[in-house]
Each structure stands twice: as C-alpha cells, then as structure tokens.
Length: 306
Image 1 (tube, one colour):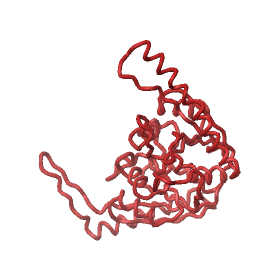
Image 2 (cartoon, one colour; image 1 turned 45 degrees about the vertical axis):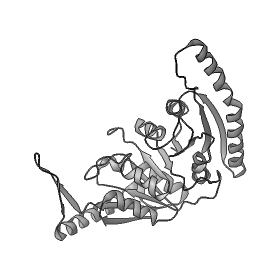
Image 3 (spheres, rainbow, N blue to C red; image 1 turned 60 degrees about the vertical axis):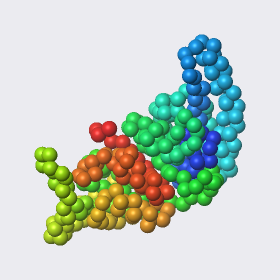
C-alpha cells in the first residue's frame, strides 16, 4: 500500500518540513521515495507568440537548479538509509503531481501545507487541497512549525490517533491504519467525540444551540464506547495495541487538543464523515489539526463522498 511515497518539493525550506516524517515512514515500511519538482511555466500578461517562446525557454533555466536541489535532498535521505530518487516534471504543480502519482502508482503523496513559491502557494486550499480532493491517493500533510526546519531533522512516530464518527466512510481509514501500525509497531487510539451541543433550526428562525442533557450524554457515551470496542475487536486490528477514548465537546477542537497532548503521533482520518461534522476536510477537522498541532495528518478522501 505504501511501497512508493511521492514528495513534492519546491526548493523552499518550508516544503522540506515533510522530509523528517517521510524518512520515518520510509525506513519503517521499506518504501521507495521519489522527490518531485514541478517546473511551472513563466506567467505571461499577454497572449503573444514571441512572449510564449521566451517563457518556454525561460522555464528551462530552472531545470538544472531544480535537479541539483533534488539530488542534494535525495542524497541526504540516502545517507539516512532511505531509498530515494528524483523526478522533474514540466507544468502546473497540482495537475503534474496528480498525473505522476497515478502513472507511477504512488501509494502516498506527502507534502507540507505551506510554502512560499509565488504562484504555486502550496497551502491547504490550493495544491494540497486539490490533490486531497481528487481522491486518487492518500495524502500525508504537515504544517511547518517554523521557517528554519532542517530537511532531514529527527522525527519520531509512536502512535496513530484515529478519529471515528460511527460511519463506514470514516472507517475507510482503517486499512491504512492497520498496515502502518503492524509494520511499524505503532499504538492505535480510536477516538470518538460526542458533540455536546445541538443546533435547532426551523424555517426562518435563527439557529438556537442547546446543551445536551446529562442523561443523554451518558447514554451517548455508552453507545460510543461500545462502538469503539467493536471496532477494536475487528479481525484486521487483532494483535495490535489498540485503545479507545470517548470525549465530549466540539469535535474539531477536541481532536486538535488530543493530538497536541499525544506526543509523536500521526492523525489518520478520512475527509468526510457524518453527524455534526459532516465534512472532515479543509476548514474543518483535518485543516484544524494540521494548522494547530504540527503533527502529521494522513488524510484519505473516500470515493463515495468526494
């Protein structure tokens, strides 16, 4: 499933923030890593044959620089025991990355959610968002904590946090979780958050938010605990170290808090769910976890929902 990991880089240190996490995964899984750079066309203000000819030639100037950069990054990974190669492509980053990932059957696309490469702007909502929404490949996302990150700095991974909402769509992440946990001997925490508030709407009236009564919350907690216990006992997770947590509050905030409080973790989730948090995608849980925890997030877009 994760035999090939594709890592888009744009030459800025912020995009290299993913490399420590890729190194840990690649060494643990025996994956082949490909470092990719998309040489984007020079933007033009006017449609003109002479300008277009110049732009085509100008974009070629970046090739030796990009190739040298990728080779340097690959050599650093190779020295750390990771099988790493490089690839240069021509064209817009989102389309080029997706096409290459599909053509080469990459099991995972790993990238930072922020970069500073002018028109590319690899931020959640742009390239990373488009790749995630395509549903073609799982995406590993991380937000750099600061500008001075070293590309192959030390990273650790000891557990996987798996937010579940009771839907088959959310459970689509489990095959990826079990493969990672089994290969790398990682602990798994199944997490369910009970939304303690109910929003009531009718006609043109303003939405009214009410807290759930204690007896309702207690019953929901029992049902949630039973559900997570059932998931933990499924055949694919047997033999793994699995625990479960039921929390109350705002689902997005509680997942963020739990990830912050769990050192050296990976958050694994699908980008769609149900209940009070209908779309686990940009602007919701996946986005908040990436933005506010600094922990890597493995996001899978379920085809039935994307």
